[in-house]
Image 1 (cartoon, rainbow, N blue to C red):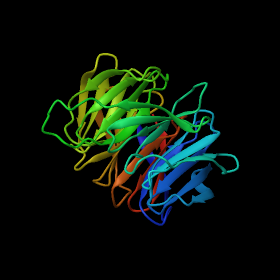
Image 2 (cartoon, rainbow, N blue to C red):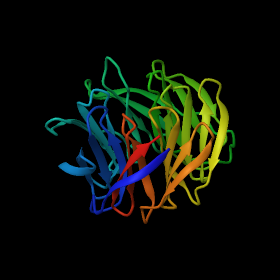
Image 3 (cartoon, helix red, strand yellow):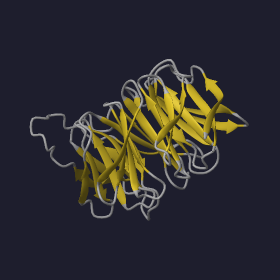
Image 4 (tube, helix red, strand yellow):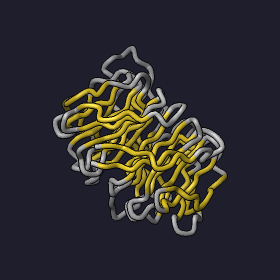
Length: 311
């Protein structure tokens, strides 16, 4: 398996690019930046072309997501707002403005539901908020478990993800806690141990059976989501691991790090298959396209890189 650089879009934003998400169908990419904007890109051939520029998200964009139908996009920003818009005409559907300060970080749409639900990492509330977009209200709030180490005070949720089958929600916190919840009931199912520093990102594997985490301890962990067991710790980055993305075929995953590197990992051999050094600063987001043919990375160097993936 190998990644080949197709394009490095220099100055993709006017400041650090902290978030990226592909639409589930087609070739549309969404990026979010500290420059207080969201951009929509279309892959044409082997390059990304900007299609639209959404502005007005104050204080920088922390997370972006696109729902399973591809009709709606969402962004969380440092002003604690969550903005939802239509992907076809870019008009705002709703902006959640009543969330307390420092409580909108990573976010993720439910993969499929009768309701349009959006999970938001709740920051200093040490919880996950589930927002009902159609009803324009909070549907649930899932409390993170207490840390086993009572001396640890970093109660802050940074990352959140739905399992592809929609049954679970995973959340990662500043103190290294990783929690799995039942998406339907909000019940805490498991706490995954092994990290003791901030878990910046996490994702389920395509079969929903495993969880991969990205942590400031310079490791990515692979967990059994059914039995709450650590399967493997992947080391090799020289600084914080900031982002993770499993390949849709379940054979690999990618990581981005504050060491400015993107790494491709083989899940069969559990080894690093490749290290990419195209960025010159921290890599905050790596995301495989839903068909698995492309990987995108976004960085503090203001660039977005598009890679071809070959197995």
